[in-house]
Amino acid sequence: MSLLNVKDLQAGYGKVQVLFNGHIKVEPGELVGIVGPNGAGKSTFLGAIAGAVKASHGTIEFGGESIRSKNPEDIVRLGLALVPEGRAIFTDLTVNENLRLGLTGRREKSGAQKAIEEVIDLFPVLTTHRSHQAGLLSGGQQQQLAIARALVSEPKLLMLDEPSLGLSPTVIQDVFGVLNRIQDQGTAIIVVEQRAHLVMSIAARTLVIREGHVRATLLREDAQDEARLAAAYFGTGEDLE
Amino acid sequence: MIQTILDALSYGGLYGLAALGIGLVFGVMRLVNFAHGELIAIGAYLLIVTIDLGLPISISIAVTGTAILALLMEFSVFKRLRVAEPSVLLIASFGVSVFLQRLYEVIFGALPLSGQIAPWMTGVIEFGDTTITRGSLVTIGLALVLLGGMWFFIEKTTLGLQIRAASSDFQTARLLGVRSNRVIGAAFVFSGVLAAAVAFVLVTQRGSVDPLFGVNITILALVGTVIGGLGSLQGAALGGFAVGTTISLLNSFLGNYRIYTYTWLFILVIIVLLVRPGGLISNKAVKERV
Image (cartoon, rainbow over all chains, first blue to last red; front, top):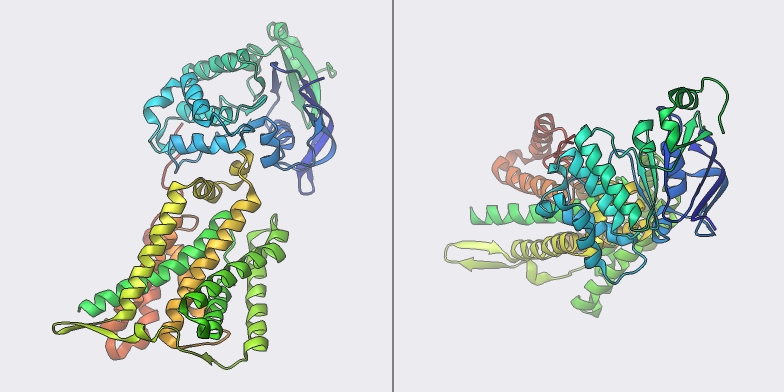
């Protein structure tokens, strides 16, 4: 049984439909990428899975349980965490307070402090800033805090929306390096990115979304095939799925 | 002079409590709750009609009743408007306010209802040549205890942390597991408790309550929350304190010209907002880094 199984998902904002046909399967411990141009519906897709955007049609099963009608605070307690685009850390709270908020969505209330310490080990750059205001961290540190905050809830599936946004190449390498380590610990990951090569370098398979439809599934080796990549990304030629 | 300073501090504390009550609900719901005045009014009504049971029981009933009415507002009206635009929430709160004013007229009458709640508060204490009113001291003490208690709750407890997070970014707080109904419910309850405290001070000063009892202080406390910085709880308390203190000092210094108190107050408010449009403590104080 797949950890996440989404079929025929439609979602949008009011009368504006953004996602027309979202589908994805994620197995436990798998890292899946989602790429697509600006406005393709990638963030809406993740938001609808996490309960932040209302889905109007389709099914979302997580761990065999339907979660389409659940609200975000219940979904995170089932083990599905979203790091939204733009980090969404609480800049006026301290790093430690941000991490404590991440504990809210834990299923197991025991071992909370241990979970924070383990996550800090994964992101040692946060160690010296724990009592500092989160808004004073650099962009890369804020992104690491956002991921760390999601991890303290010990999710079975971690969803990241454009984690490279606004970061320098060196910092991007650091952040993506940590994703592999998180996956090694058994956590499944979905990474949404505009930079196809970046996400395809760590994901075994990558979905391409254009105009609200999942148009293609690319494998890691497809990253070398520029023609196939361009066709999938920009929609030149037929859909490749 | 000492009495002037104490009056200013007690007014500041009183308006700070009212503004914090409004700021708590605004923070988590982006709702400017005009019906906060009717929470203050019900607190005062409950104090007067139950005072024969003794002050401690009367205060307990007033605090509990006001908190329950605040929760009732949330469950019966505002909970149904969770995804509505702020303008819809604002109009709804006007509706609740007017409805409750009419309801108070039906239940308690349109004329002021009189009663002595704590007559010992109207006395004075003499220190040599200086006399100060007990009311000022009690109000300052009450404000210190409640603002201190609220500070501890907001800064040191998990629910307080969740309220701060929800005030900053409600959607992200929910994605982390913060239960929206619990946080909003808590904000309304504490808003009600603070309204009851304001009612106690006001009704001991005035000795009567009418259906429009809480309207004036609510409008001025709203001004305080704007000056302090909408969305900031510390800002709301500070802004309310600033408005209350300024009113008291203007009343003292203007003497026979005190009819111009509010004129000067709002001139100062405009100047503050021109200099700091985001309020004294802006939620956007920390600039985003890349």
